[in-house]
Amino acid sequence: MATSMNRISPLRVIEFYSGVGGMHYALLLSKVPATVVAAIDINDIANRIYRFNFPKINLLQRNIQSVSMKEFTKLDADMFLMSPPCQPFTRVGLKGDKTDPRTASFLYLLDSLPKLSKKPRYILVENVKGFETSETRKQLVQVLQSCNYSFKEFLLSPTHVGVPNQRLRYFLLAKLLPLQFGDSCLSEAPLLAHEIIPAGSAPTGSCDSNQDQTTLRSLQSTPSAPDRPVVNPSEQYDASYSGSGQPCQRPGHSSAATGRHNVSQSGTSQGNKCQAFSNTPGDADSVNSFGNKDSLEETNCDDHGDVETGLDSIERIGPTTQSCQRSVEEASVSNGVPLGGISSFLETLSEAETEGYLVPDKLLLRFGRVMDIVTESDDKTCCFTKAYGHYIEGTGSFLHTNSSVSIDWAFADGLTDSESLSRLRQLQLRYFTPREIANFHCFPEEFSFPTDVTRKQRYRVLGNSLNAHVVSLLLKYLVS
Image 1 (cartoon, rainbow, N blue to C red):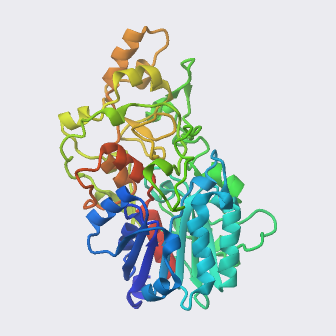
Image 2: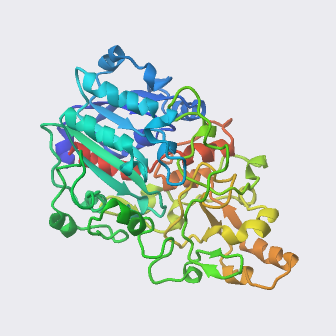
Image 3: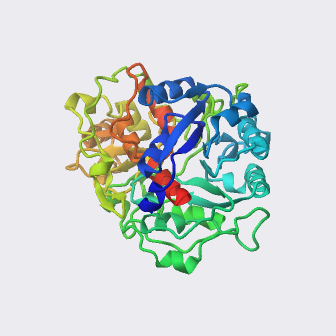
């Protein structure tokens, strides 16, 4: 495949909804010869971070609907990368779909595609689980068919390729005919095993270029993500969300054995389902006039609980943490895929830095039993949402750093508040740092934030981003 890509002239790429640059990092990881000719986003904070990391890129802070046909022609793009607003399609949201104003910019792009004198040869679309059953997806497919594209759709999580973070997402890859999807190299096999095959008869606009399933299952997969038969979308969610029959637990291990812990109010240990809970009223429902992936206050691609942590009020952002000592590139690798437990993605923090990320006492007592608690030897973390650091339930995992103290001992029944707090403190539970979440997203070590971006803002923009490694594999497959 590398030889195939080396023969390609550099592709001219437009990043729509560019955020902090997740798609750009995926493009770099893929080693697909390409030049980003424009990145477009309306979010001021995300744009500041993008510009800080990519100062030479043509970054446009504007409404996507303002991009004219003349500008599209001038940009002369070979590839569109798109991660449109996800709130209209979230599982527990209002599911406004096409009627949600935040979908308007994406519908504008769909309306513009047939009018382009030169259409992009390659398209990649990313969104949340739920988009695959939406009316917007149907319109996307109809437009692609009318414009002579072949395409494939996937429901994928980083856990499928050995990254210990659950982040199930919808992806669509499209090629302008006569370009066709070819056979995959081994490193993409785990991803192709999660291609969506609609149940029963294929709906209007479904892909007609699916790989032969026998061939796919015969391809080698990474040890941590064995190939599975392709299933229909409704079955795919439960089967792939954690990679095991028991969500958020390693197969054949109890929560106590793995260090994962979620305790019911009665004190009974539960297998943590890592599920998101109800949206906070007013947090993600307001819409501005742009309809893009808008301000941080209006972007909530993952659902979260309604429990404030108060971490955002703590001013102990402290000095810039040390560079990650065990970066993604230094983790074990199989078929080009980083493998390993959570420890491979952690920073080396000083004692003072660690203290700044410890869960406050009042939150330990009140919400300790609903936290998803993991140890550095575990192989999964829950999806980190934009509300991490501000809410508890369903926003991400917490790290148990004192391995000499048992979680079950700390959460024993019949303790007074004073006794419980004393034990919980000994667990030394802390938040994952923004840099560690960036590591789970497979961002390179050189990715960083401007110093004036607060911790809360860092969590928010990372919660709205994507896994660069997953997308890089898709890009390699798309262009091969």
